[in-house]
Image (cartoon, rainbow over all chains, first blue to last red):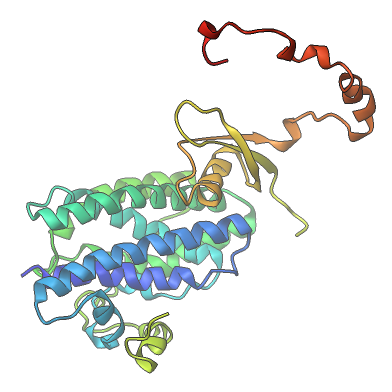
Length: 240
Length: 94
């Protein structure tokens, strides 16, 4: 019953972890490079837990690696937000901030989940994500309330990514919890941060959908999976 | 890079009871950012339980040119070392 919800959690952390790792060696400052790599590794680590538990409960003999590397784009159930390209550092940090804010709300709620294994993963992850959110929040404020150029870039990043926020809170029986109940907590942190960052929340609540249901991923998912899966698919069960 | 962020010196306390030790330096926009960067750069392998950051410009250092005047005079004053005293056993570890 919980398999679909576990896969959703694991797929979102997997795809975002892979996306963020694309910055490795390319970030604008050495310190940010290491920080982004740490975040990516945290997310991949969480993926191992979520997909590992999903595979175990599915009972078809698939481990976390099999789920990550041997499924095709239409089998993925990640949020559309996380498959969006990095573009510039501002877009990357805005995407991270929106995801972290949702993610921490989810994990705090899942930490109270009656299912002990789900609760344990959430409690462990929440410590990492508390830091992720602190860091991305500070960065959004620093860049938003920064120079004229950084402010413009952060505002356009927000306009670009805000249509992917709504999907995080749609109600769906496959989710581990009712995501709609998390919206007020998300909104409170979002509003407080955007105020400090001198950024304006877009008026339209239009929301792209189809990521977590798998109905309609964006074109970007296939490309990122092709990169991520090429080695394990070319050399199945390779060890190094 | 033409617009480098300010430099901070980083001190990490490895475990409770020890003092903070200088581990290196990094660039950051402000002190809070420096703490975050220090966490990511210097404690990712569980090196510490506490972080201090200090703006590098706030550190006043002795000049290498002064080393003869500052340090050489102490080289021939062995009597300043406490090795000429007998320490009673019941004093314990010093």
